[in-house]
Length: 297
Image (cartoon, rainbow, N blue to C red):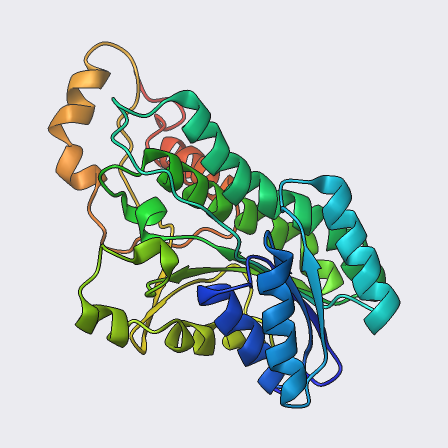
């Protein structure tokens, strides 16, 4: 877990979870670029790192601004020589039920969480490909994985990040770019007023950052979804049941309904390596149920 020769960018690191990530990375020796919408907050965290002997660069700017994020990456490479780790942490909330939510608030949340992560990842992708090394963490959420009342915009953006991670991990594999998701439960500015004081204490962001470190080291996994909070860690997976072959033609829809429990039976379910696992399973099922040669229809 030694990161003394690595440079990390953490977005939304001026307070809360991002600050905790930045400090944790610095403790392991990483040179940290502290990004935040508030340049003042970013500078404060960078100074915290430098006071204890770490190396840090503060950089104010929105993750939704491609030009500004490009400048941030250029500054990181100029000062520290490379970018090895990117933690996409920046985010906002605009909670309302779907019925009451206007489209501007939906777009803003998706733009910040999803497109902000896309913009920052795009800014470092070629650097990581060229150097043959990179570690990228997307911040997803149980709200995206499992849903949450009043967070349709946030849930949509957070689940989209899982899909982004899945594909980038495949595309980055031959360049040793490992891409993972972190689903944190932490007491931050975004959860103030929602959690009790006891829960706020038990859900310190520092506990989550310990899990982050497992996703950015030399031996990090790839395509993992790590759920972390209160010192507890679990993994979430997107799985595929074995299902059954129904066929087509008259009555097929009714047979799907009748077989619903068997279709959803999780015995022997798998975590597919890529999207072709579904079609391969479907075609295999069709082949197993095809009429034998010479058989009468």
